[in-house]
Length: 102
Image (cartoon, rainbow, N blue to C red; front, side, top):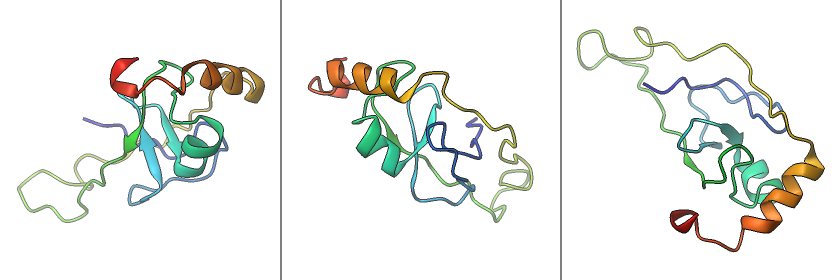
């Protein structure tokens, strides 16, 4: 089950559970759309993979025991350990390779 991290690992803006600008990689690294497009160039600084929009967990439990009330989002904020310079250099090396070929 996805953690639904509460913030962008790049710029640290809040990304609530219903954020439509939240993006994740296959390891759940979470960034806002602006960081994915402008800073990261769709290259995860941690794994080198691409990003996809983060799904929104239903607020309403349409099945017993399933929904945001039963599986709440994470409250633990995560920030990237890489500097903006490191990220830019890494992204520059890999952005020309389609995510499915990385």
